[in-house]
Image (cartoon, rainbow, N blue to C red; front, side, top):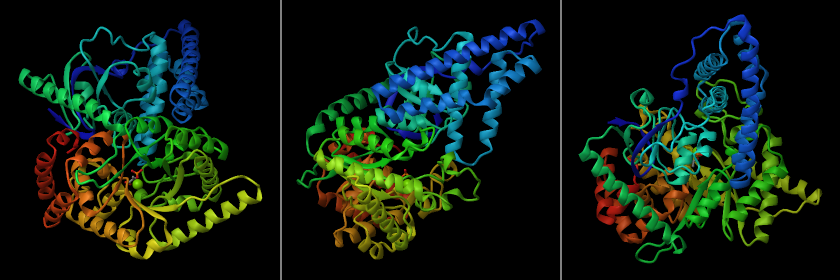
Length: 587
Ligand code: PEP
Ligand code: MG
């Protein structure tokens, strides 16, 4: 049994399908002089076929999913065109007499160690695009693009270092029941894909690819973050039972999508979706969300080879509005820095403390041209939404002081004036702050008069409050939303917003986790934004409890002095309120 990070809840029992085995045994042969030209030609041909693949994938994904998701393949094409990339491979073939396969292996090692030195998590994850391109090139060299999955028995559990975008697409029709990755965090591709598809997943199981081969039996427990390789018959049958319950419940609950979200005493709740792009918006509507509580627009920039211009952004926002009929879409302005960077914004320098540094709204203020382009696109989208019977709200990440929000208002006002001057049609939008910084949470009563709504980014708020990096497994025992200090602070924030009649939503992971959902409900929260896959189970949980019950539970939890006590107490409470919900909890 191995313990990692639980990134997507549920349980799956199946057969391992390992990706990247292709690089386990690099070619050690040296070329004869007479073989060099043929080897170069083989590489060029693999390169042409890879370009054709990426082109085809881009078109396919664009048609079936959306432009944002397809853009990742344009990024990969640009990697393939990169002169340094090709020069290195050619150089190693010609000068060092490496085979093309060995040269690619060396190139992968080169980029992996280069990227490993960066402390920038976003850049670290981009190495996956490089790797994806290299894997594809190598597969064309050896003509094994996709190892056969048909010969394997049973449902598949993907085991990979990190699940690469093109692999995820290629596996689109395959019956994938679970995902295990060696690397990865909550923000990695695998985690995002798994959550949006409702597939159980565990990340951070280092060395698993050395421990397991394709065809081995494997269990993924995405609630506890546990992976069991080659389980004994008792473990297998126990987990098969859990899996059946999970699948049955998930399918059954999705049928509730058209019912309103309501507590058993009839208090209506808003269950909104966190989305990264158009395809998530479609999933969200299918899961019964009542709107979009957080559109993380970084993805739109990160998967785009250049800055998406105003019209391109407007087109994306319009697609999301179309996918979410008659509802409100909350768009967050670009939130990069910290763990994510966009190289073309010049954010590739090293900072000693990136999460405390030049990130998010701080960075946007210094790129007024990008910032106002996005604001203009949102204002124009707002008019479109109104015409369609919906609405748009605009929110700003990582607001720390009231001055920052005043500045935001000024910038929005200026964008409106310019649009009016250019005779471009737009509509007003409510302006909200993301509450992610403890200083703003403590002084929230002083900031509320200048904001139209608040959305609590509890992922960041908890990491800043507890001084514990949200992506560092070594301090994950501290970075806990059920820590007593977090509960006290949030109780106060929610009470203050309600007292001043400012709408408040929580859009961090805790909104969609059963135990913390109950606590937030007890604090008086009525609007929750989460990964679309969590909506049906949270709706079900809500229907099993009254507000008085949630308040009672919170009251007890607030008296506890340690996170361990709160977690244990909440696990007991959850079992009493709705035993089925336990399946959807991640530890
Ligand atoms: C958060 O910080 O809780 C949040 C919702 O934003 P992100 O996870 O994108 O930082
Ligand atoms: Mg955040």
